[in-house]
Length: 235
Image 1 (cartoon, rainbow, N blue to C red):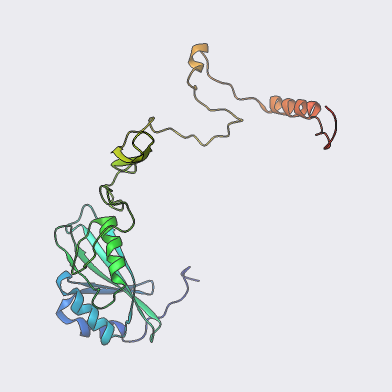
Image 2 (image 1 turned 120 degrees about the vertical axis):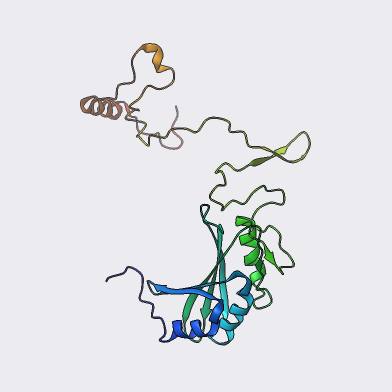
C-alpha cells in the first residue's frame, strides 16, 4: 500500500463542476491524498454554499472547524466539511478571516450550523454575522479568552473555586501553587540521577543500588515475607 488511509475515489469531473459552479468566488481548489479542498472568498460564503448544495449535490454540513495561524494575516481559517449523500463523497471548504471581520452565517442553509458556529466562536473568537444565538457553548459564561488560539496559555487566565465562606463559585487570577516540575520519568526504585532537595546537606547525591544489591534485597524480602493468615485465624 502506498498510503495508510483507505482508498477514497473522487468522482470524475468533481473539480471541474465545482470550479464552474463557484466561478469568480473561487480562490483555489486542490486535491491531495484523495481529499478536495475548496478555498473561497469570505463574503461570498452563503452564495457558494448554495451552489455546492444545489448544483454539486453536497447536501449535508457535517462539521465547522477553526484553524489558527498566528503569523498570517488574516489569522484564522474557517473550514466547512460537506458530504454528498448521492456521490458518497466529502469536500472541505476553506475561507480566511480575522476577529474583526465577521463570517456570514450559514444557519439559513443548514440550521445545525448554529451550534457549530458557536463552537468556533467560543474556541477561536471568530464572529459570525447572522447567527441569532452567538454565545459560548463549551466554556463558562465568565471565561476569559479563547482556548484553541495558539497564544492562549496552558494555565488559562483565571481559575475558579467554591468558597465555603461565601457559598458561591469565585473567579480569581491564576496562581500556580508551585513552579512547573521537571519530570525525569525514571523509576522511583532506581533513584534519580541528580541531588534531591535535602540531600545536599550530606555533601553527596543518592547512589542507585547496583545489580548485586538489588538481588540481595529481593532475596531478603522473600525470606521475611509471611503468608497472609486465613480468615478467622487468631493473631
